Length: 93
Image 1 (tube, helix red, strand yellow):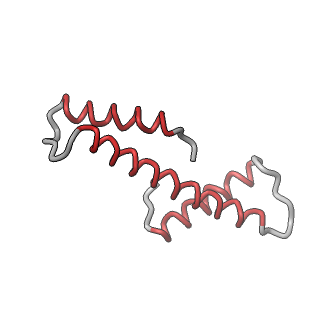
Image 2 (image 1 turned 90 degrees about the horizontal axis):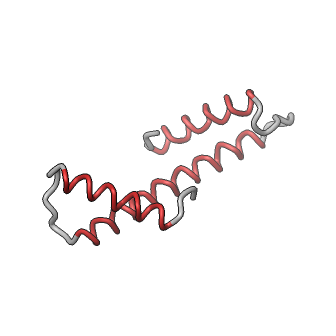
């Protein structure tokens, strides 16, 4: 996960505030509960991205020849594998 719980709570609070200020939603739950739900969605999304990233890295590392981490070739393969894995899982990047 690349975001702390505090940052997720802050982002969720900003999202709820913006939705409320722009009158885009009518709360059917408390503002706090909505912020918590948004934080859960963010956390799950980041978890899925981490899983996809780890799988993409495993595929690169499974190559017989060494591909230096961060090299142009490594980044190209990572992006390709990440996209393929995400698409296979039905995850939109």
